[in-house]
Amino acid sequence: MKKLPLSIFALLFIVSSCAKIYYSEDSIPVAHSHKTIAIVPPSVSIAASRKTDAEAIKEQQKTESLNFQKEMYAWMLKRKSQGKLTQEILDVQTTNAKLINAGYPEKAMTPSELCEVLGVDGIIGSNFALSKPMSNGAAIALAVLGGAGATNEIRVSLNITDCSGKKLIWNYDHKFSGGLGSSPSRLVDEMMRKASKKMPYLME
View 1 (cartoon, rainbow, N blue to C red):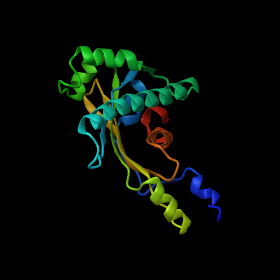
View 2 (cartoon, helix red, strand yellow; view 1 turned 180 degrees about the vertical axis):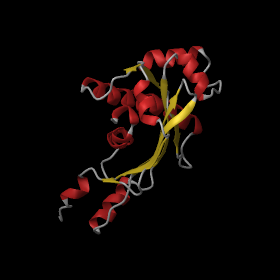
View 3 (cartoon, rainbow, N blue to C red; view 1 turned 60 degrees about the vertical axis):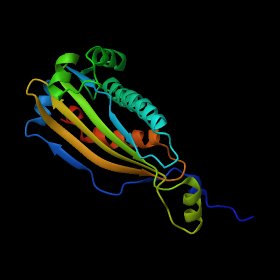
């Protein structure tokens, strides 16, 4: 039996395009003036197949939203413990409790209204679009032929709103693709590793 190349089973990340990043002229000094920030639950969309139940997708989107929010929070806490972040970060449980009490997300709110509800200086918002362009089986077959294909994709948009100035000071847009053995959570981990380097909270 012919052995498959070891690389087939390795995690493969493919960045298919350059990130698009927006900074306001005063993004760094404004971000550094923030004392407390909060991470709003991400908006998550998942591309469904024809056989997927709509309610199941809706529940999965809620689950992934909380998972992504917690992972982003963990990343920010890690940076704070390393002395790279000076802002206090509102914990996920408190953030979500305040938003639920205010009727969010059933009640639509502007970034300024979210700021008021959370009582922070800045909020981090995000949107994730998940898709699965290729099955693991197809990826294996392609790898045997010497090719490579993405089995998971995430299109992500991160943004920071300054609550005092009521304006967007930073936005990061990118698409991340993962090969055989990848998972959406691993792709998010890679995304945070790259995006955090461009975040004004972590820049001098």
